Amino acid sequence: MADMNRVFLVGNVVWDPELRQTNSSTTVCGLRVAVNRRHTGRDGKRQDETCFLDVDVFGAQAEPCSKFLSKGSPVLIEGRLRQDSWQDKETGKKRSRVKVVADRVQFLPKHQAEHEDGDGTI
Image (cartoon, rainbow, N blue to C red; front, side, top):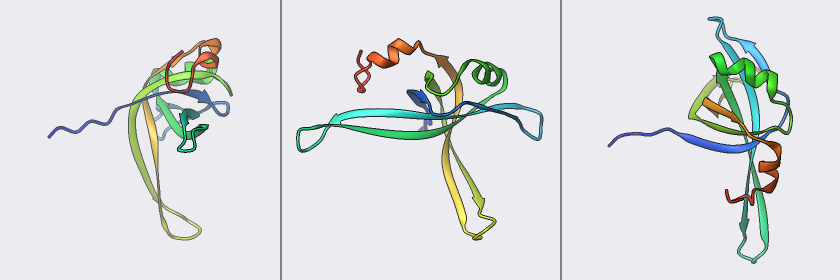
């Protein structure tokens, strides 16, 4: 059976992007994105659920993301999931987190994100 690792996210940038260089001189833009989900709970009330995700944008897309995105900017991100693992220097415990590696970042107009119903419909 084939494997697939693909994500599509529509959300808002949580803080201003951070531009940096890897040891091999690749440009990387780090983003934190909030993705909202609105649903009806068992009690019949509408509930909002927010997921915060770290996103890395590499190469040619990194600089435009750093230049044109800011806190609150709506974006569509297409990419894949990557798990980072490391050993905590203070506690010595193994740590890990899942990040999104963006293949494509599309800047969305602010008014479109404001009119979405949370379930993807406008």
